[in-house]
Length: 314
Image (tube, rainbow, N blue to C red; front, top):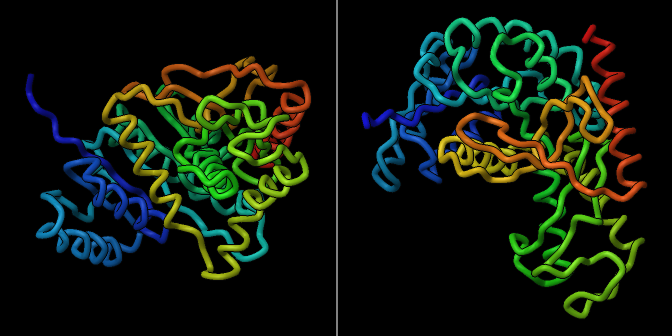
């Protein structure tokens, strides 16, 4: 079988785009990176900076390009858009970033119609749905990073609380990547032990303490933005992990922003839910047996997203 170069394009070489490129580079997730940005000089500078690390990592072709150069990419990551300001909700970003996405959609369809598109711009759930509507490619080939970051934040905090490796914590933050998200505690376990309602590893169950953790996850981005002006490092790792799952065809289950068509009694909206990810994009959407309160919170999150979509005519 003829070898095909694992090529990834990144549209938008701001703080998040650069972090995603850097994470992909360090993890050697692909063989070629194409950076596309309105500021060509910035893209060229970032590409050259990354290339200079090859003597310490491994060989990877990194270049600045145009939309036409994305034709050879299997995966394209969209991080373009206006960044989130201190005190600003992700949904308040909507109007400006919606305009950006309308201009990007045509270019991606023209030059890279067969690529899988990963959306990392915020508000990610709304923009994922919007791009699915604007693009001609199958909707399961447009995936948002969703609550992968929120879930990682939760696992990190629970790892500290229970004194275990965060990767040994299983469970999900679901819904919007934002203020209406929910921690699905019924899905959370450590080493096969559900944490809800019982003592695990000597730590007694406390509903109030867990809710504090969930609130900390919601407020994390605002706290980081207050301190450094933007978030980029952890979402960069999220981007790399999702791209790896696609290119490796690993069938990994990840909480990503996907289109719903009746699942969880929700339709015509994109929300973050566990989905099986592979070379075809979203290959299967997992329907969790959520508790009634969790399902109600998820549906409320869906309503919030639908209201936002209606504001931009979708």
